[in-house]
Image 1 (cartoon, rainbow over the protein chains, first blue to last red):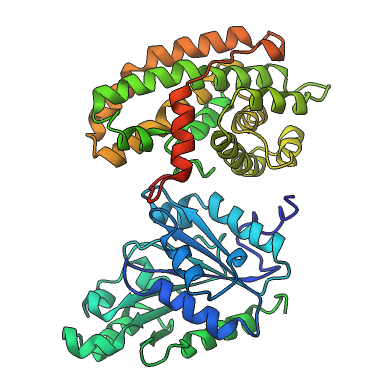
Image 2 (cartoon, rainbow over the protein chains, first blue to last red):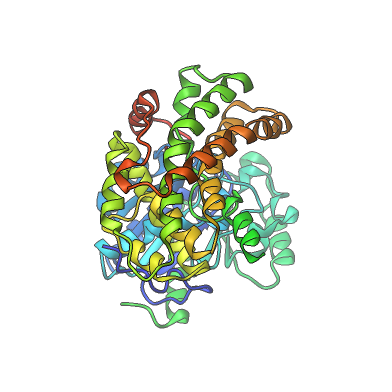
Length: 220
Length: 226
């Protein structure tokens, strides 16, 4: 049953199948809502699988199933035993296995979204696990977060500053957040997002489509 | 000795074989208040090393004593004997999950025919089978290989308990140091068994642990996968 031994175990990862996009960020920043929005926006044109990494139980996977953003068999939950960053960075065996199972049962897949458990600003995905990574923060977490940096904020391929509609309510200055993000991210892109105003997460979906085009050798 | 390096790598909790989200039953023990402090944990670990620890160490020692050799090991028989010793379906599933992950990782670190063979096991090899193949491929002596198994049987629940109960990490290290002679005794016993016929290997069981594994599989919410 394990005929997916190749590729996923090579480092750096060579994209031979689905584009793998990791979505990380602090607890409550809107990772699961973003995954749901991306599934709704992209599921007509792409074959999609999702792996959630819950800190405990299968809360996020259950949310996605309940909202029927994808058929149940396209969503897998990986448990992380108190240590969400370990499962995406230091010991990626369980996530590799979950992605391998999705690719095996649903081949050919175009896109796998891998959602990290909520973590701190230093959490990044291993490059052996994903092709691209998105880090999601939100304005309610404070407008100083981009300035504080950390590998998640500074090195993710895309930084999403979420819940911009809340900015006036929490006294967050979006211009400061964008300027600080640009300063610490060395030219990497940042997107401001409000899923209330754009439930399709159109700009993020567009960015993912661009990544597929730039990586090239993907199944379509 | 090059095997000293392999011994440290295989016993290091950072070895990336997917064991970190497993508690070996300690989460249920904590939830039931059977383990509430370091003294309780000491009793839990002592019981575990003399049951699961000995069975695991004996199988690993048995495999390593015979690998590498010209004749292929009867992997199917080893698999069946291990399965017969794990009463809980949830524990069998966990054993194969951990075995699959360990075998794949070890096959990249210490490539060998034995690891390539066990990686291809239907549903994945049991954890001790993968560990035996990994230890043999890394060139570990029999006693060191058995030590990896017995040590792991103790440290996996120990570190999970530290996280669940907020135990003093230094006191935990002192406890693990105190358990050293118990682990060594289990290793000695496992090495003695390594020359026995496969079906004569220890078959100790811990029913409370097996029931806990079944309970853990149904728990929600849970922090650990097992």
